[in-house]
Image 1 (cartoon, rainbow, N blue to C red):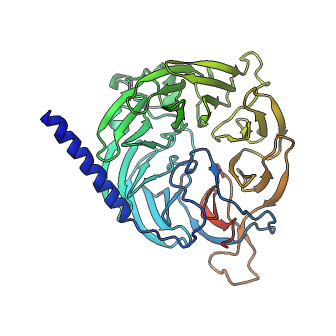
Image 2: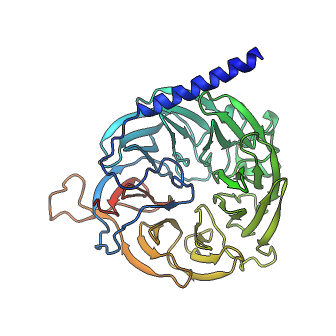
Length: 465
């Protein structure tokens, strides 16, 4: 009884302390309309914004450029909380988190730690996972699996955890790429470790590696203590998705070998749905989409998509693409997460840029409503009845979100004068967003943020009233 009371007191003290510390984080923003974008895929974790009043008529160079920032290596988008933007990239031999004013790009602080990560496939060596802001704390996960919890105010390290070392994670093809999620007092992360004796010099024999029960790991978000772990799955690149179905909380993780459904409070697993192409180099990277009790998953290598109905202790298959018809899939998503709007899913179907198609499918049936090719691979965000589409070559499009047809409202390539001579009219414009532009756009307080190979651009999509 005494231990229970002490534990309760400790929990209450931590909760009160966290609330006080969060209140100490002043809001640096001046734009009062709109909302923050503090985690991967936004406040509702579905790449959808509730903001209204977007500009639909764009000049050739796109909406007004507010500021832009030179970036190092990496593929992830920043996040925004209380007027602060957190950009995670690699600079030389360090992984770097920068905190800037989100409306101006003015630096506030910078945190770095040493890294020697090398991408064995030849892609760049920077972070793939977006930061996560929770009150007065910001969490980052590097491509080697190093997890940090930092103070939002002064970048002080509150705790850190080397997931690769502690769980013996074999380097996957593209490093560590899933972004953690916060559920109450927990931080939940696909880890996918394996026994020490199965360690490999490269992922070329990844198919023979067995898991060690760390497919998903939940940490105490305040201390970094491991609270539970489950599944022998190895990690994919899709981020966990939290949802409430019929009054019960769920977490869904699209791991290397398939979809895991479990209770995020306890780690009790409800089901595992195998879904992975047989090819060694295949990866599951598109984050699941949950609507009601339905869960949509998709991959681009061979088997395509499936829709499940989740229920306690199991699932029912609503539909799945036929394994016998390789080219006749409803959707084959590589890394992008589709956007759900009014019964339909919009996403970039195809593994390679030259064969990718932007598609709209009916979620309930998988029926294809329309396709559009010659765009390369695109990433999407929904706002105010429209889709913001960012092509991998830097083309930005504003599309009406309709199942009737591919309906373009505006198109732009963001440009600016040479940053060394911004006021000279004789200097040619330079393209801000260049290949590979593989991260989905984000929107916060009317400002749209886009990332290309080596630059982040902020434009005004919704003027302040």
